[in-house]
Length: 321
Image 1: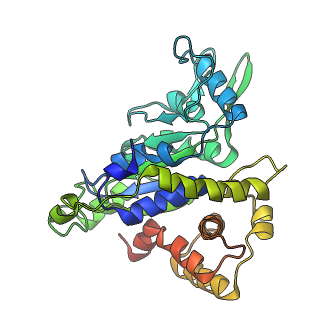
Image 2: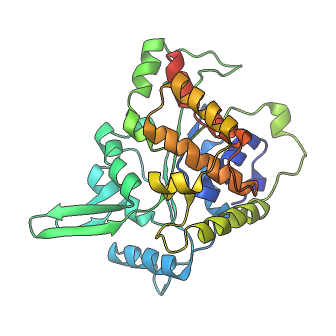
């Protein structure tokens, strides 16, 4: 699968390039058939190759779960896990009489894709908060506790409303404001706080779909991702993290020098949108990744401005929809 297969969606592709560069979590929002799943399934094609240590860890997890392919001694592809929305919390997080790794662990060093995010049970989604924050899960039983790695990139998709056509220029939305709010309320604030990028994926026009313009291939995007990851690898050497998304507040203070104008813009946005401290830090980490892609040591106003564009749900909630 290659990004050159997808017509248009330049803004979404840019957002996914940033996400892959800093291992940021993403939420794709758009009407049915707009290309959200196609975009998500091509993310592994722009991620860096597994290191030997990562490949060993991925192989161990899949071996414990009994999912190692026959005659495979070492898995070399980044995992892409896409569980159905009917999944239980035990299957997602891990569990069983003899504890086994769940989907969050099987997606370690890869992508966990949750299609139709609001259709998942609320308690199942809330169980994601701890692994997203800590990078591991602990399954406790009477006989003892087992800890599994769970350091993955979360990619999720959802419709903008129950019928799927809110904001669509060609199809009228049939949902009431109350129905839209109830639909959005299935996603808790703490979970959304842990998603760095909210990006709209609108339906393409016929002219865009039939365009003969050659789209940028995954290989070219991957080269930029690798350059940004190399910068982060040098930055975090000896700190047991490898990407900007994993920075602690102390590391953010150290590695996110920002221009006065950029800080002023971020301060105004936080005040206007009522963002939490976690969202404030998410925007700084995202801006750091954008600056890395730009080859800049300091975060400038344009990096903050672009990062703020990827908080569409914060703006909509402020507007009451």
